[in-house]
Image 1 (spheres, rainbow, N blue to C red):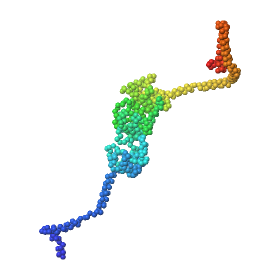
Image 2: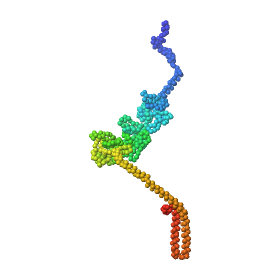
Image 3: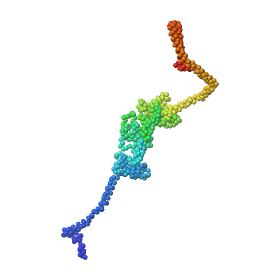
Image 4: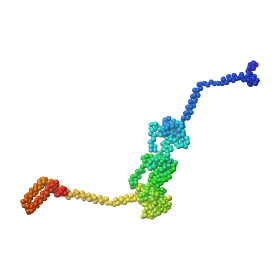
Length: 589
């Protein structure tokens, strides 16, 4: 037992097992093999089977890293409708380069919109900013152009237009319902127009300068639509330099038809303006060297070219005239003229009750542009009230006149009548009140028609009709009377007698007429024999004997007789009727 216990003690002979100090070297030599054995027992052999999972993990990591690196951004786009789009097929493009594919299409939480999720290829993150615009390309007619026909075969796709530099990175977008009017970085300037009404103008409506399309309407603002409409228009370079500080813009939409003294006038800016509406601009002729307008400068938009031209005459003066008669046919915008030349327009018409005189008056407000009248004091002097008062004392009056008899339109005419009753100018607020003349316009026309009708009514149509009936009855009595019938019968008998006489003469005179040429020939032969006889007598009696002279006279008479008979025969041969009517010019011929 003790031996066993002694055997279990450590070889060092020390309770803690440490070697004794006196035999350190020997114990070290004996412990070395033990340590070597322990090191050998901890080694692991590398098993080749681990190569397969290691390679698999490496490949997976490589593919994951590659996929992550090649995977582009994912964006969401909100549209009103997903018409033409298909998940997994519809593409996202820019300049016909495929940027990605639509992955998912779903309804919004409130079911009012469509949310499209698209995955883009890597490297296009810089295109996705707050200024980026996105829309669906499909067949459409917009801004006067037909586009998207290629999508009839390939299908609709989403087009992406990068915005200007400096936008913030963005992944959620709201799609446009229509393509943008302008590409980015298009040279030109944007201007702001203020109008009373939008009319037929729309996004993409053209902007014209001297009949050339030089820009487009970008859109309008609705913030101040309670008072006016603000439109934004873009004018491309180099035409933007023709927009000056005093440039006039007007609505050139549709067809402008006017009827004037020269006839019917039709003004059309272009067919495109008829379909889409349009805006035109030009500069006043008096200011060709005005300063160019800055970008985003505001201009008024006039309703038509005539209103824009009127604005070239400077600040107007405001007048008012009271009329007691009807102003039917007079409307806002009607012409105010001075001796037939336009100098202003009507701005307002209303009704006013005059308590003092217990009557209803019609105040007509109108404006006059003094610059339309050359060398006048109203355009140069500051004391306008004194000038107007002097004109009223000299007979300045307002009167309604007819502007168009077909449509019944009226206008206000100003003129100086020296014989007008005395009157003084008054004021109604900031307006100068001009005395008016009664009548004029439709009243004058009505009065003239009334006078004409009175004169027509005064004509005794009944008496004239009775006289005509009496005269016609007398003519009928004469025509149907016995005397006229007897006269006609006698005339008929006389004509029958004349016809019978003519026929008898024709029958009886024809043989005689046939013998006349022979008689003339015989007379000619007789004259010839007589000539020969005269020659013989000449020889026998001498040329100066009495017998010879008598014989010469006889022969001369025979010659004349033969000539007359020959002429008569020729005349009757050509014109037998000469026996009845006698010799006429025709017969002489």
